[in-house]
Image (tube, rainbow, N blue to C red):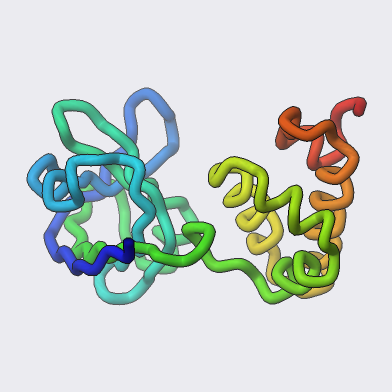
Length: 172
């Protein structure tokens, strides 16, 4: 079932106490309720009408939640701790809850076994691979990262996939 909604509101940027250095956008309880009262939802968050990104909602307590905002995005937006932000939330109905780079998509199209193993992963592990590959600017580096992760994934026992294993950092 495809969700359709657009929720607009103002919130503020704050520093999460139990994770030093992590800045977050508070999602008030009444907004969480408009999202169905659940935290297992993928969203497209647009900040100040200027920057959109895929994200998940994390429980904060008391029915409210938060969305993290990294330093790169803060710099791009020109915002700092305590600033008031205009937020727009929409459902992310993409297949994996975030955009797959062209390079990773092509590797998955060409390698049936890698595609099968990738699709068998939990959504969080799928997003880890997508994010790790997409976070570099160079197309050749995205290809290298995609090949590294998917080659190592195919070597790991099914059901025993770990991030360290996909990076080739633990014995098989």
